[in-house]
Length: 370
Length: 234
Image 1 (tube, chains in turn brown, red):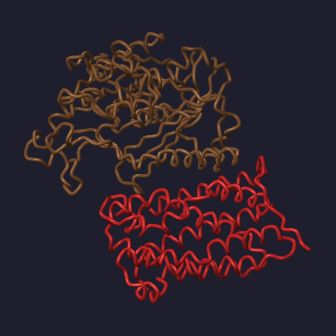
Image 2: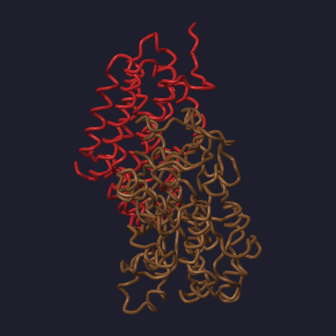
């Protein structure tokens, strides 16, 4: 038994925001421009991105709004109606409400009755977790259709007021500022069916490997900036005090970040060794890390080891759509398909590395025609 | 007059060489994850590593560094005339590294440790196992599997230089005079890798030999981690 992705959709809020406008939207911390901004923006190479907040910091689209919009666009490409959906699997790193689950909010707005519901929580790989659960539910024969929605609204956490509340520039270092210039907003959706329909993607396999047993947290919200303080945000007497201690800032441990490349390679080698993955037969490689992150010694070794996917097979829209966390691979696959880049019979390998505490997901698809 | 045969970097590895390299890479990544759980190294990640940890690390690395020259020299002598090219390379390697421990001792003293303390420190139980295994393998005829050992030990030298050195200086609040040993191995990366590729094609010539290389890399990785888990346990 397998499952097929019979339609996809994406939603990116507002106009495309260029490099020079990013700080206009997120705002100047204490009225002063960031000194690290240029360096981080240059190294990540993102040219345009989208935000669900306007230049006054007001939210223009909620996370639910974006997830619902992507789902509606996805369903427009299919004869199925919301009432036909058997399972709804939703992912985000931060819903509009901490409770209930994000899936409940999306279901409420889409008006799907009596659906089997899943809300996946995590960071970049949460979308593939939701997708795998939907894929398995179809494979088991419990349902015939599933709608998978992955959406992120990071910009609300990146507003200048968040950093001012945590002590402003004096308390900001590279680790606290890094993600401010990386993340942006957007949503993607996929419709899964147990039978192929028209031109669609067969899901050949999905696998993931998490390494939280071996590594500390690399990307997080919840711990105060002071590493000696072991409390997490809800341990503070008030949320105000947690915010003041920097516990509500999104931060990245850059010293640990390089592990993401090695672990991505490790998982691929594992799949090659067990015979699941054959690099030679991959026609398209979609990854929300671009090839330049892999350059260096590991790249040299992969080339020698015959395990390197040639650069002309890499596809990414990271530079124009931004890094939208768990929505990235959904947005990327949608654009890739709509641009008509794949022919019938082509194979697609997707890789989703999550730096939170190191999880890497892989998905192998084939474009088929029913 | 004999000519030393050189092992050149091949343009492409043989299919078996490629498969072996992929397996060695996995063995290395597995080793790195295991190191992430070793208490003294976890403290480096957590930021709680101290000067005392730095002293302990050097104290516990020294015996293996001293013995390192011995197993490499023994390994070289176990290759017959049909492996003269491999032997030359291994001899060169032994020559390069046989007095590294003196650098390590100077670092220990620069950090405020007593030279007599580090010199009199016996092998910890992990080093004992690692050294015993390496000497055993090195005593076998044509021990090509020790390429797997070199893969791990070269890799750890590189990791020390690139991942540990700055962090150790930051946390143990010392200057570069106490991290010379740890930094030393970061140089000449490219030439080491080129040699490795040449060695791989030369040694992983049958599936049995390839298996032996990978297995030895795994055993050495496990015992190296054990050496770091058993700090001062003598």
